[in-house]
Length: 220
Image (cartoon, rainbow, N blue to C red; front, side, top):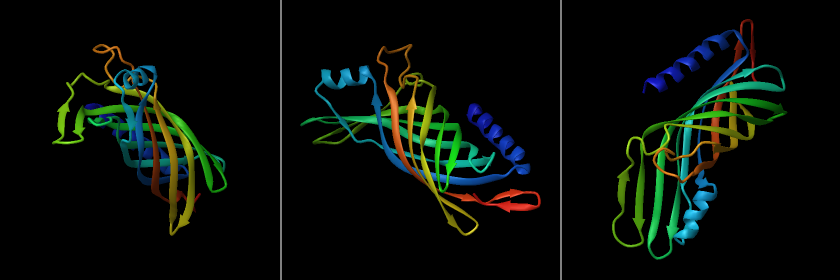
């Protein structure tokens, strides 16, 4: 919790600095698909005759866009993410691996008319211990919490994608398609040898208020 408050304070400081800059504030949220990737995950599926299954990923949060020019911007953001993965064994049931994160990032955005391309580093801070759920084809499902140190506390990741903005009243409606990939393993490597990497693809919708500078108002 202390780590989260530290990140919140940093974002507030960014907001205070941006008061004198051409800045836009907004919120965003969305859903998509999440899974694990890597040789160890593929070997696990093959060894037990499992199929990759759909896992609903969720994300929502807030951001501030610092417009450096007409073409370039920096966008610190803070998202809450529900990600994980799932597999299915025909005739047996579905395994679901769930984890929640507080996820600050700094995006570099290139504006091309109403479109933008973005990329940036992400730190994913684990919230809670994470859960394993087994949903059998017949019978009731069971849920188990991982141990507190079962999953990696911090995942270092990257995000990239494409966005579109549309004028609406005093701001912009935003649409994003983004991918998130973790370079560090989802599971604690001090306890297990399997190296599973998280991969998520999210479609997000948001609203961004107009930018303000002393003496003028700008919407981009």
